[in-house]
Amino acid sequence: MYTCSFHHGTECVPVHNRREISAKEAHIDEEGIHFSWIDEDISDAYERIFGEALKEYNEKQKRNDRKIKSYLKNVRENPKLNAVYECIIQVGNEDNYPDEKLCRKILKKYLDEFREKNTSLEVIGAYYHADELGAPHLHLDYVPVSVGKERGLKLKNNLTEALKTLGYETKFKDILDENGDPKINQKTEKPYKTLYSAQMQFQENERNRLKEICETYELKIENPKRPPEEYSSSKQLREARNQRLENNAKSEKLEKLEKDLLEKKEKLEITAEVQEIKEKNLKEKESYFSDLDKITDKIREEVSSHQWPQKEKDFFPDFKNLKTFENPESLREKIKPGFGEKSNIYAYRVAESLYSWVKSQISVFQKTFNSLKTDLFDTKYALAKEKEKNQELTRKLNLYDYRNKTPEKLKEVIKEKERKEQKQFLMKNKGVDYDR
Image (cartoon, rainbow, N blue to C red; front, side, top):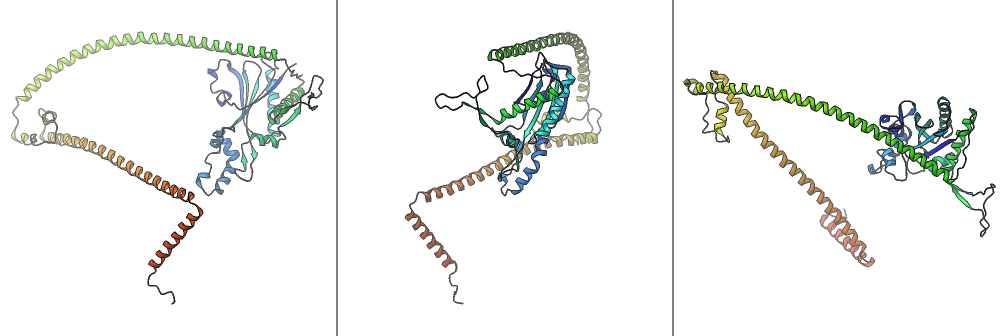
């Protein structure tokens, strides 16, 4: 004896269905069985289902602001619509369910029949999960498709109309007593009624269809109406299970933290050893460079006492006249001829240093120029927008002024306007002979 369930909702989690984050969910066995029987990206699905209708609608629009760029975005921004709906179908419960292979056959057959009989519910995802706690189950994602009215898209996302196409319409039905007879209101002598929505009818029908498929595989299905206290205990069991899963997840997280701490400790010990070696090498290098500095000082003394020939002296620029340099003495030190350096090489180095300096100065000027150019453009744009606002305000004020005038005043305004137009016409055509 087993139960079967059909849950219909609007919450769809593709990453969970595709097992993209299975390692992060404690209740999922990474070695377990799961299949993606249908897996279509929602953007591709909307293009396939509504693409032609959207193109036809946009071609009829004369104004660009009435065209729909993305129907999927349009649906997501509408609080009354859902881009995709999800059904969860299951045979058995957490404690009692059939063999996994048999469950797989039943749910695959159910999927095929669902697609065949529910033609206005376009299935874009079907995911079989047998790797979680409890019975194997099927996540079925679909988009409701209805024929639009004269205005708007030829095809639309509308669950109510899609279910209506399948014969499900919201209605009221009699409330029955224990004997299966309608309960009668003693005052009105009419039976009590309860709302029986299209979605409730759809769910009940699909649950019965699942039951019929199970029975073809010789499974006995019974879905008893349990009293409230049993639902309460079931809820407590679910909460206890979720708490257990949460505790397991925390335990795994703590183990991972401990492991990370040990790794960090080992890395710190290695880092300390490396730091010791680096300090030792640094001291050796400091000693080495200290010796180099002494040798360099001796070379500088020899260079400063060197007598330069007249032909090499001619290549020295007159730094006193280079007023553009912030610190001529520092530049002179930078481009001072090296010991034994040839004249042509020194001249090239001087030119290269001057070119680099000029280039850096121009770069500063270019940045300032670009900044001023941007500010000028922003100012012009702001003025243009302000002018446009003023024109719109003037138009609205004129219109408001006309609305506040009485019919007699409006007649006077019209006559005055006609007189001005006649006067302008006569002035423009002055001297024209109309008898010719």
